[in-house]
Length: 91
Image (cartoon, rainbow, N blue to C red; front, side, top):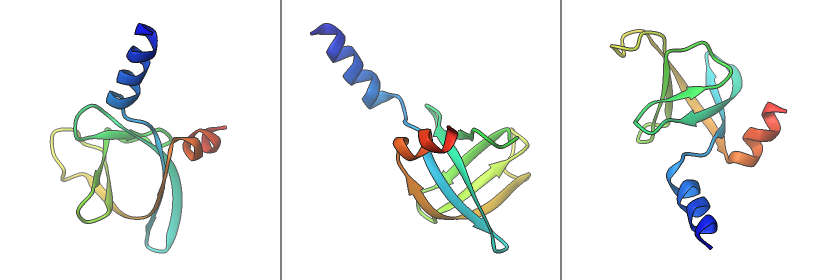
C-alpha cells in the first residue's frame, strides 16, 4: 500500500516527457521535451543549455547560454503529445 502511494506521489510530482512538434522558417521538427523541476527543461535530442516553453504564447525557446535568454532561438509549437508518444519517438 505504501509503495503504491509513493509511486502515485512520484507520478504527480515528476514531470513526464512530451513529444513536441515545432516549426521555424517552414522547417518542422519533433523532439522529446522533458520539463525540469523549475521553469526550464531539456530537449533530449538537442544540444542546448536549456529549453523553455512559454505556455502563454505557445513558443519553444531553445537556449545555448544559461545566464541569459539572449542566445535563444524561438520556435512555434505546432503540437504537443504525451509521454507515450515521447517514448515511441525515442524508440
